[in-house]
Image (tube, rainbow, N blue to C red; front, side, top):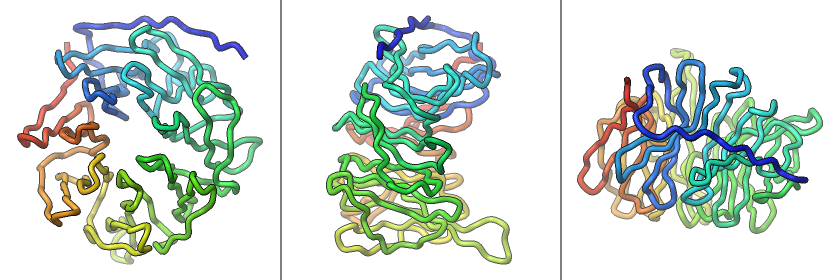
Length: 328
């Protein structure tokens, strides 16, 4: 099947962003020089890139001519330093597209049989993982090689699965079954499910160590006294099949991320970010209101989203840089 290439208008320079209401879904490029993110400009939803060396922002898509439903964009993943893989509904269903920010082109990544959601991309194997519902069945976990059409159902069952999380080395993928939040791990290398000894309800696997020996998961508990759950974060040793408590009964844990170094991970609470060194068993607290979403590949910077702002935390000097989109 031939893939039609669309030439995009790229706007670079001092743009008017006075209507931006939210920033969503940001990610460092592999070389750490760029950050791709999705921003809402009033009713228009587009992809932007922040260029770190020259402190500038470029608008990489222009969806102002599309109706609101077709503007949908999510799940940003860098393929390399110039190409971004993401999901969009611009042709009516949610499917994968490749945006080339150097050539200013947009191409469909293979063929989608149905809507695809919650896309994860493994740069090592060049395989995408996502949730989809084919032939009106319950959502399942699928994988598809870059540029190919064949989709493989990894989960085997269709149990309304969600929240896929690929390991950093590409050996495992975690996901959970809704509505009860039962967690699963599938070994991509061995092509089989991994037996887990963690709670079977209200559990989400949130991040992996670089060598896949450990993962972090949140567990939510409810009491009669409150309508809102308490959240605990655990570190699970996949080889020893046992977990250890990181933090207990927090009001809210928005996310956890693990660096490309074995010993460093962190998690976001309501008003702070906690950096943990697993090797030395020490931690540092940063007063950052926002959700930690990505770690640069050199492990020196952490990216946060705070409403309509991006925040970069430099771990070398503990400085915080707020990337505020110009309001002109």
